Each structure stands twice: as C-alpha cells, then as structure tokens.
Image (tube, rainbow, N blue to C red; front, side, top):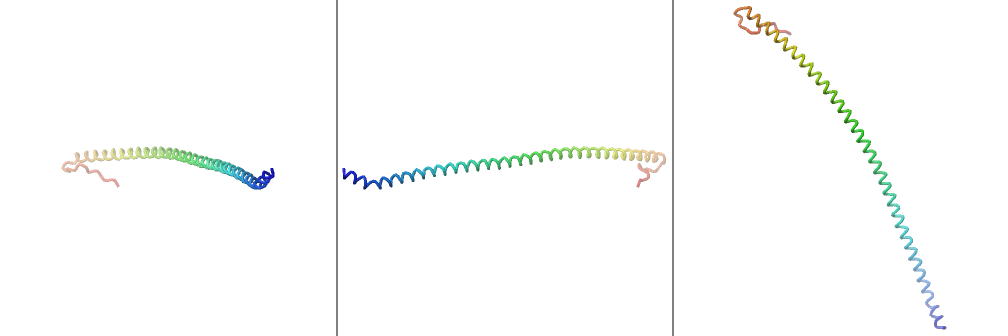
Length: 131
C-alpha cells in the first residue's frame, strides 16, 4: 500500500498537468467555435450589407431607366411634332410650287397667244420677265 501511495504521489502532478491540458484544449476549442460563429456572423452581416448595397444600386438603376424611358417618350412626342411641322411645310411648299407652276403656265399661255397674234415673231415665249 505504501508503494501505491508513492506511485499516486509520483503521478499526481502528471495527472494534474493532463487535466490542465484537457481544460486548455476545451477552452481553445470553445474559442475556435466562437471565432467561427463570429466569422459567420460577420459574413452574414457583410452579405446583408452587400444585399443592401445591391438593392440600393438596383433602385438607382431602376430610377435611371424610368428617367430614360420618360426622356425617350418625350423625344418621340417631339419627333412627332417635328414630323407634323415638316409635313405642313412640305404641303405649303407644294402649294407654292403649284401656284408658281400655274402662274408659269398662265404666262406661257399668254405668251403663246401673243405669238400667235403677231405673225413672224417665231418665239414661243415672249412674256415679260418678272423680277
């Protein structure tokens, strides 16, 4: 029995040291788990932050697209207005051209009548020139 007590005393400090090591390992494992949890929470927070940034960018792009669509609609209306003005100017130009053509035809016909009335003139158009 004395030998057993001696062996226990000799190995007691080794057992205590092993228990200390086990506690340290458990503490380190807990710290590692906490670190992983904290890192995961940071990742989640970062992803939420990234989602918020993405949502903000999406909203900005949506607003930009809406503005561009509005500008496009305005340009379409402006183009229709310009086309209407162009058609009106073309119609007026056609009327002016028709009026000049009819004036020219009238002048030509008057000149033809004069040339028929004066024998020997031999010219088709003797109308006075307009300035």
